Image (cartoon, rainbow, N blue to C red; front, side, top):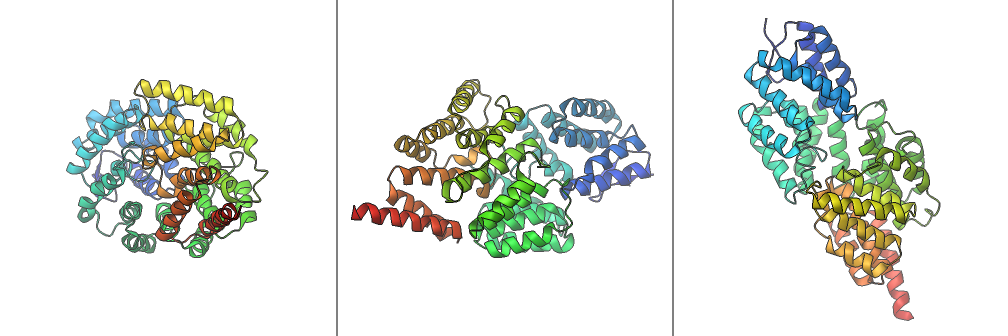
Length: 445
């Protein structure tokens, strides 16, 4: 008998049950649902000779930071691959390169692979989203590159719920919001529990300034979404941003305490530090009630989770944590280590990452002129870090507040007005009012 996945890709297994479990795991993975890993594990238990089940489990294990187990699963997949089809052999090779720590090589192999096998969705998914191989490439043009990868494949996927959610996200990051909304709504209509589609809708509503609609959508969608699922915490982070825009500070802190803080977060460490640090820092920058935020607990957790630099997105958010917790020594140590790693060519974001650390050092020291100068010099470079527009806003916001505190109120006003021209946001509107009040006071004085 021959078996295929939902996309018509042949599966080399002798077990109908293994093929079914693998296909179920694939869909769970594409929907950001936790059962994916168990399905892949059960598939290879049903058929220990099933190479794709082993490599899929390896990737899931890697995402959870279980590197020894991931390496063992990958080794088995590599040993079994010669007995599989050429497509499966190439599939295993792409993941081998990615898990082996060569993201540039993996992306090149992936692009070649989907040219020949466009409906190999699990391979394609590795280059999708802000945490994918393109998102973490460090390239300024990565948003265009993402759409350039996906658009030629529209005909191959047609009305597929997963693909629609991914191309929608790519459209939205390029400010093509209505195309993004149309594709996302169709994705949700086809499979409402697609976590990626709900996440994309949150981004659309953030970028179009619909905090009320965004909060209502996310509250409703999260009903029944279990904490073990991939986007549980991050979608609550989006809900917190909507609440912050609406001025509901108490709700923001409640979401942080119940879902987002490291002690309760169900996300991997990378997502946890990004969501927790950025949310607290946004509050610290603009909210009058934010005088006593739980920075120390976050700082202690981050020290244990990331004892050494090496993950750019985490490093950038550790800078935020050390600044918020008033730990200049730890921040200085991180900057020094990042300079050394950058000189060795080990930082995909390049010199801008230690430069960002120096900007935070100046901010932490209250050297507002230098902080403003340093953050201004990084304008246009934040995209190298990875993440989405919504996530990287925290660095732009630090730049704005550095200019405010340096007394460069006209520059700060222009930046906030530009944000408001792009999309309404209650928090930005209140921020602009404060800047205008400061400017009026300075003029009167």
